[in-house]
Image (cartoon, rainbow, N blue to C red; front, top):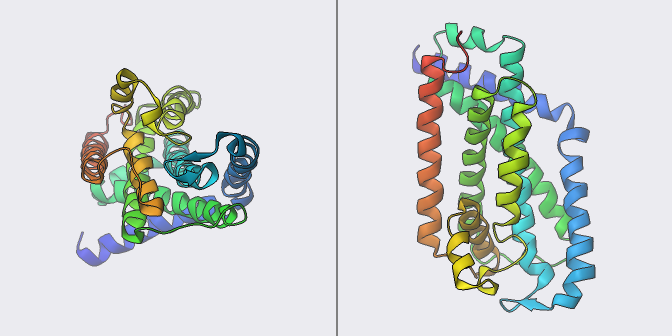
Length: 257
């Protein structure tokens, strides 16, 4: 395929993915916004007033970046894992595999669809958060780059989950037993400096901690983790997952019988 044909193929996959979640926005965009709004009310207004300040900011201001990032992570992941497994289940993926579209382009297309949904939900949650607090923007470049890299990473993770899933139950195992615990223990609601030293070190093994803290730095200018290490971890994981996704798709692992 020449470059022009590759661009058309990529554009087609992206449009399909965006239309897929865009047509049912009441199911894909609205629920996470409502869920995060409840977090704002319960943790921000009701509990936050009792907790007081954290790292020099009101508790509401402190948790907003983490809640936005949590919505981006879960929706980027959910979009690709459900879409790609749906293609496997209905045997549509074979049409892509036998076409001249290179594997890296297929991965990029699905990943971009996941990023689009993650950013759409993130933007909606950010808009809602303005009703509860006055957002600060310490470093917009960090905010934009971190949210893009994170949504890319979890879109790729969702694709890999879908590749190896054998049933619809399998696509819910990782989000339920891995993604959700790591997210809640990733510093969304607290600073790890409140933990004993041993558990601080354990928390540093959680990659989501680096994403949440880097994103919080973009808004508030505070972070439990060095920004350099956050970028290194996120970029490293993203590059690794992209390489693995392209490879397994190329050899048909989990797809070709």
